[in-house]
Length: 333
Image (cartoon, rainbow, N blue to C red):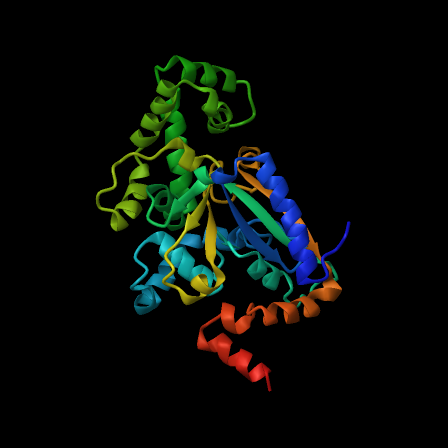
């Protein structure tokens, strides 16, 4: 494997990868995005669900509520749950968001940051995302997935439990068959429904959505969504509970997001509680998010950063707040 040791070699490698991606798929139907990893072995997963954060996962709703209570002026302009998550991500809170950029040189800059934890090489992940996953910040689907951050595990488990009970009482023939097959299986009924959902008749899919929206505790989710969207209809789809990942384009109101040409992957929930999270390599998303890795030589990081600086990709440009730009100015002396 040939390691990248300059901006030029990175661009050559990137050109080969993007040409391959474009030849394997309909170019008009994909969005190319990038993410830089200081350590090659890092996974494509949001900070909230990384190893060692189980306590933070359980308390996601608590620390968000505490932040809203204690810093109302800072959050006043961030009205929706998604905007709040993007704000928290900006300030280092663990969230269910994963930062991406549409500029490959920005991802290379982040990959080349100093790493003192291991001697591993760095990497840039090239993600070709099917546009069916692309949503804007004000999408209803984004509101639903973001609202999960405000519910505790008990409420989520209750929704799922009630949903399964409703499915067991359904008169739909396909659902009855799945319930009967599931009786001898170790997996949950929802996992069984999930694995078969795409092959079911449209009428059965609508019945599944109908039974979901009949559950009593789903009103907690409605409450969170209607707080930001009073017009939201009481119609949530099963796919929102099914290992869902969305690529979200947000407002460029944040100077850092604008400078970094940023967007996010928003991760939903899976299984019976927040402790099980959608992984980008799950079977459902292998066909929708195609990722390739470019490996960066650990010994060439400083050289590459100097080359990027000549191209205007540096701390001052990517972190326009005074806290960071001021440090960049001082570093010159």
